[in-house]
Every structure is written in C-alpha cells, then in structure tokens.
Length: 310
Ligand code: AMP
Ligand code: MG
Image 1 (cartoon, rainbow, N blue to C red):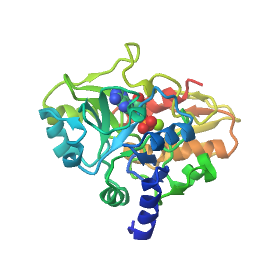
Image 2 (image 1 turned 90 degrees about the vertical axis):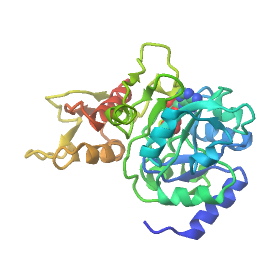
Image 3 (image 1 turned 30 degrees about the vertical axis):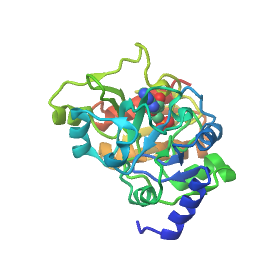
Image 4 (image 1 turned 180 degrees about the vertical axis):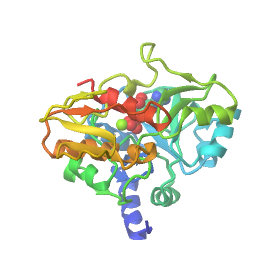
C-alpha cells in the first residue's frame, strides 16, 4: 500500500495533542496514543471501556529507542534479530527512570513492547518523539478490528482519526512472551511457539490458564462477536451460521469459509472479518467445525475458545 504523507501528518498532529488515533498494523488495528502521557493513555481506556488493570502494549520503531525505557537480555536480542519488526510482544523489565505512563502499565515494573512491521505505522513512529501505547482497536472483550471499516463500526466518530492501512496481513494478535527469566508464552499469536523454541534452542513454557494469570486480559471472555459460539460441531442447525476451515463441496447460505483449501495463514487472516460478518448478517449463534490444532490453528482455536465463553 502506498504511503500517504498527509495522512501520516494528520495522525502525527493529533497524537502530539494527546489524542487517540487508530493505526494499522500487520496483526490487527491498534488504538494508539502517546505512551509517555497519562492524559493520552486514559483516553484509550475510556474509549475501549477497558478495565484499568489490563496494561497496554507499547509500540516502538526499534530496539535503540526502547533502550530509554527497558533493560534487555540475550534472549531478547536473539529474538529481536529474527522476528522484529513483526507479530511478537516481549515482557521486559522497565527502567526506573522510564517516562512510560503508569496508566499504561497499571503501575507494573514490567513493560509489554512490540515493533510493528506495517510500513505506514513505521513511518508514523519515525515522526514521533514518543512510543505509542496501542491495544487492539475494538471495544474491550469484543472481536479485534482488521480493517479501518471495523474500527469505524466499533467507535464511529469517537475515534478522531483512523489511519488507513488496508487489511491487516496476519489478522491475529501478537504472540506475547515473558523473556525476563525462563521464556514463557502468555498469549498465543502470529508467531508459532515452535519457531521461537528453535531460535532460542530452548523449551518454552506455556502459561497455564488455571495458574495465576500474569497477562490480565487473557483470563476472561475475549474476542467475542457478541453471540454464542459452539466448537467442534459436526451437525449444524439451520438457524446457525456454520464456520468451516475450508470450502467444501456443500455450499449453503449459512456456511462461512475461512480459507479455500485449509491454509491456516489464510484462515487466520480471515477469522475476525468472518466473525464480524456473521454478526452483521444477523445470525444469533455460530457453530464451528473442527480446526486443526497445529501451527496458527492453535492460535485460531485459542481465540475461538475464549470467544465461546459467552
Ligand atoms: P491487547 O489489548 O489486545 O493489545 O492485548 C494486550 C495484552 O498484553 C493484554 O492481555 C495484557 O494483559 C498484556 N500485557 C500488557 N502489559 C503486560 C505486562 N507488563 N505483563 C504481562 N502482560 C501484559
Ligand atoms: Mg485486544
């Protein structure tokens, strides 16, 4: 997508005035504000109706700039080299003299950081003298936005500006990894755990949902289209929308496909868009057929499972 400089300038101007702007990223759209400003970060929580105890991911252009705010270790440096910019979020120790807003961290002494790949958001970050706090640009606990139209559907005019960046290329949130000691994944996402394990040559722990939750946003109903979801369904009712991983021979008006041939990357990219479409088409419930639990399929299943806790 072509970079429109006047759009970026408009976003820059608003962000400099502590306003919120929706930004495109390769994972999902973000609702961004100055991460050094309490006033700006408060607006994110208010707009999203997000619980105050759920801290925000901070978006940086590169690790050089992050040095102001966080301490690094060897594992971080290795993964940064391989996967950044890209769909991976690191939990790091916050430096004592960091200027990051305590509203964004909920007074934690750790910080979730990411380096987005989307060229438009990278151009914007280059122009700012602060990093961007940016959770997903959707109402709290609802389906994430993967296009500017989705952001407008959720917020209308309440968000002052949506920076257009086309459809998000990955369509699922970042993988969150706590890298401070033994690497531990807090949220499945756009990068597979096996790829991280290979890069670090280490086994990675997956945070168990029943243990103490260190990523608060992960515990409750999340990613919900606002209607009930049934999983692993073989027999669908007529009134339900039926979500399938691939296009089969049967085509019925209530059948929705995530991919042509079962490609998991394509399915991930289409997931949130399809959930939103089903809701728009006025179905009252969704039945999901089995989705292979491998690679990105694990992340898709994770999201559908949380979305089904209606
Ligand atoms: P989102 O709202 O979709 O951007 O998701 C952000 C996720 O990052 C939430 O689940 C937060 O709980 C998590 N998060 C942010 N900061 C931290 C942190 N310091 N430690 C652990 N998880 C965090
Ligand atoms: Mg979110």
